[in-house]
Length: 423
Image 1: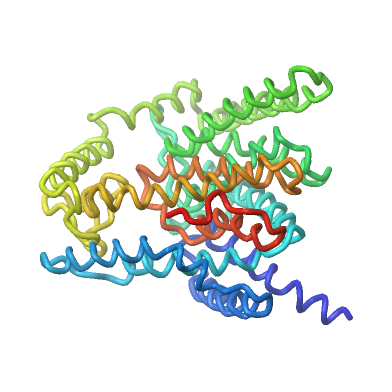
Image 2 (image 1 turned 90 degrees about the horizontal axis):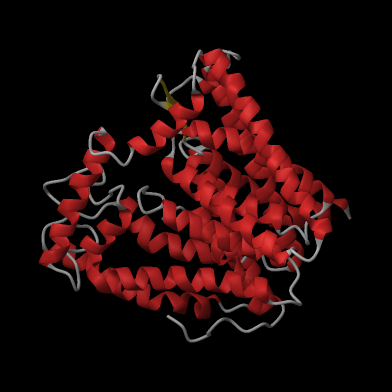
């Protein structure tokens, strides 16, 4: 009996490990992640056949995507641009793999498990980042966090940057956590405690990260969820306890900031954090100047071929950001416009729109269990897409796998999709 139960839990355990390893350590554990990835793909195919799900019907939804981007790839190749594996992986392997991985989460019980898994992953990543910061200012002496493979540190009177490779994941996870914090009807007591502790540490980590995109989406989500919750609960004063707890978390976080300021010997840490954030919008900043030059080159190239673009694998010859993957740019959506034109960009954002809309629709289903999970994923998706405009991360497999879990519910409870004929 115990062996049977363990066998049933293995896929969700491997799924949890895959999510954690890809989110927390994007540059490590490559072989282990690959083996877990392959296991999950084969299990997803087996599980779909066992449940009688015809995967071809789901994959048929990707026909417009594959048709147009295959044409765009050929267009770029005809103009002499090379094709590399990373590009094929992003546009042709990831969409299929994401649908397969999402199919593993095929019941309401598994949805609840994924909800808890993402809460725990958020807490673990925040703790890892917090230890990284404490280690960097000399309070700990842990060699693992001292290497450049984990992150980088820049601390001056005008700049504070404690950057780690897990920050892109936080651009999805923290908006997810914020929504679960305020819209907590479906949360267990354990989940609420984990979420509250995560938020306290998260405020410190975000402010000291130096990641403008992370700071922006965290602040916007915090304000919008706070206001939305306040409006929703204006006639139920007992629910205001979460708002007071939020302000308490802010106070604790500010106290921690000044603790760090003391050991870093900084007189005004708040001004340094603000200066770090606003410096990104100045052309005097090296990074800002590079992105401005990059944007101009991509826009000029787009104007030369606005309808179909220059090819999926094309790059602006006057502005290269990577010799290994020349088609890759920080200004991802401008690069998409330059490469695939108006048609390709519309197709890309149509898929994004339909995925986020389906998550929001499931939240609005009053009879649906795990409602706040779908609202949290909706928030995470929107935030991640916004942050992805200036960070080459929108193609991460874990993001698409989590975002498309929502479509499994038409098989679980026979609920209709937003529009079964879309895309």
